[in-house]
Length: 91
Image (cartoon, rainbow, N blue to C red; front, side, top):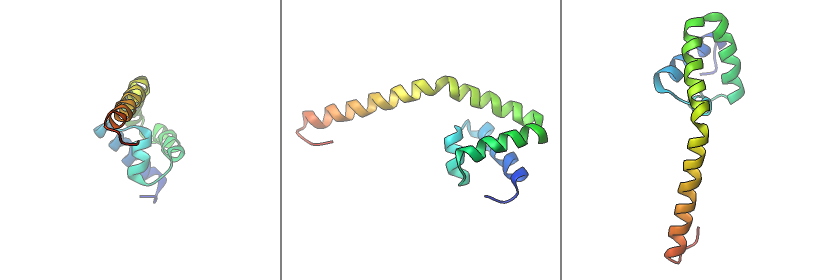
């Protein structure tokens, strides 16, 4: 959905609020870059301040939790590596 930037900004905003998605996940769903998602949020601030505030709440929550997701990914990686090594396999 690369069409009209104002329509895309509103659609992305609604998606983030409804799904709790990260900027990276929203970019993948809409087929645009993370930079475009951020630019759309600037458009949304002007266009629909209420929706923008809701999006910002989700983005701030995701930002506060990102270190936890990163730590969990690292833990899974090393558990997988240890599991493969224990069974004589390669990573």
